Length: 118
Image (cartoon, rainbow, N blue to C red; front, side, top):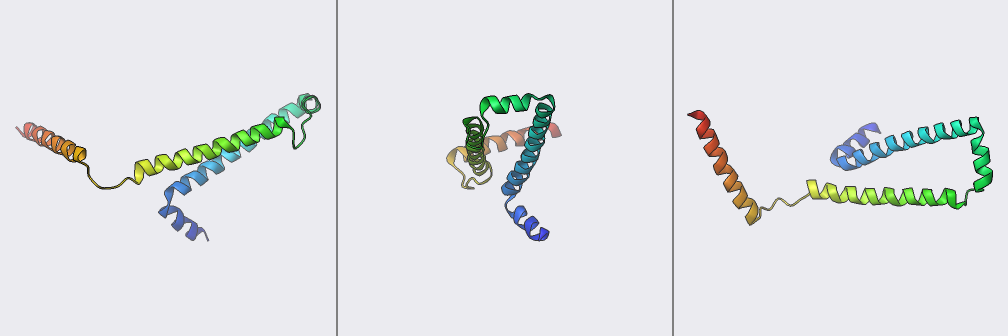
């Protein structure tokens, strides 16, 4: 099974990067949230906050941050895909500007190599 995942991820490296980054961030977030909860519950502040904010599953103090982070995650995912396709999946056709620039650069590098030989 692991062999199939490696073969698939080698063909589509962006999915491998996205998945590994998501898992790392998820683990870090869980650990940080658990640490904050542990500190607040040991000091007794969490019980006071829970009663004052009325923290239930449908409380706006719970749902708004969840939806905001979900929207930001989707936005980052879309922007990441756009940047990936812009950087790696551009067409290989050469424009007039590219041809002119490559001719200039080739001439300059040839002159530089010749000047170093003398």
